[in-house]
Image (cartoon, rainbow, N blue to C red; front, side):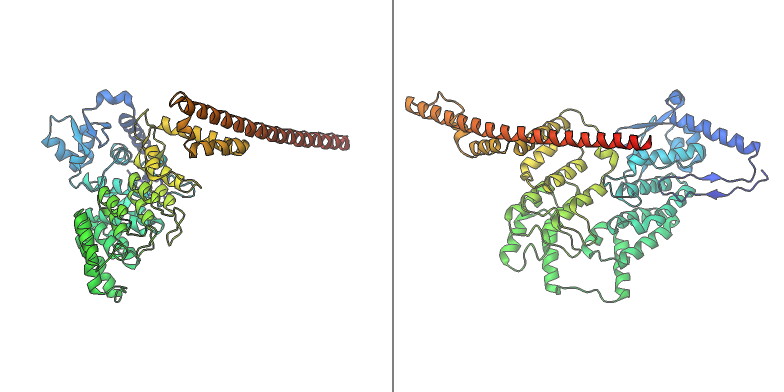
Length: 510
């Protein structure tokens, strides 16, 4: 071919494709494009499933049909794999990815395989690369990051260097829009991709070194060698400011170690010694982030920690819980008095944190009757309920969240009926609330129980309640009818005025 081929990449982070640009479209280029289109159909159309000779099985049990000869010719990894396992028909992703840090999903694997079949990079699926937050532009939120690092890692494992380079560039382009916690995720994956991702590793380390993220979070979130490199780089910038002395730091480390072991008895012993407390060690923050849910519950039941206390990063316990995405923990913290409207230093509420961690497709995923909804959706629903004027208690909140969609829809319907009653029949609502809040409801459940005298008293009380409820209803009904009449009169007057203005304007035009 005489024409010059230029490998290009769209600046659109959500998609774009690798393409070959030419001043003149030659017959050879047309033939290559047709070949690419035909192979695309082979990969994507179910009409060609009968041609496939193997399947890749994902962690969620979904399967992708593949053709050994195509993948073996395009990837040294698959050539070696198929050469060793000639009779194998199914290959599990978790076994193909030797390091189990990255769970490569259906959408990311499809992007990689699509490239191997067609030589093109298809746009990232919008529903899988967008979060639930309506205010987000979906440039650097967690679903975008997750999808990109999965493609990056799968491309590295399958030995596709040009695709690794492409997604390294895309990740470099969005780093400025990614929160530092997700930068650590990118860094951990890029570090596994060897020297080909050296630029991305260096850029991530530079951001983290200059950030205010604490050493505990760094140690928990980074590989040991990278953690040491970050801490050494921070020391080179100058002495690290600390508000606690070495003795206090040792006590805090001991508390954190007890939480790592989920040893509640040791924690209680440390507290009895009186040398430290849960707030000084930010123990509740730590437990919510890293400990077993039962250990976190045990700390909450002690009632010795401030659920609205902020850690070194300015995060409350609820902020940390939203990042962990455990609905039970969030419900418990809300019950203990956590304020859902508190903001992080960069202006995010717990609800926004949860929304930006949740994929749109997961949040809107259909669940069958009685089936548990995705955890991410439950977290969002509990936090949304917590921001209302009358949030549910922890157990009620969690029970509602864990219920199937049909039960939650029924709950919402009943909740709307109650709101309607409070708004348009306030006197009736007050009478009913008094009945529920007293023992009248239980006493009147069965008028035939008790002695003759008790039955007469119950009947008398029942008639009193009936009269008061009827009186309240009559007054509410009069007021409701008056409001309807006034509304109708106002609407009629407005309509008449509009008609007169319309007729007047027509006369002027004539």
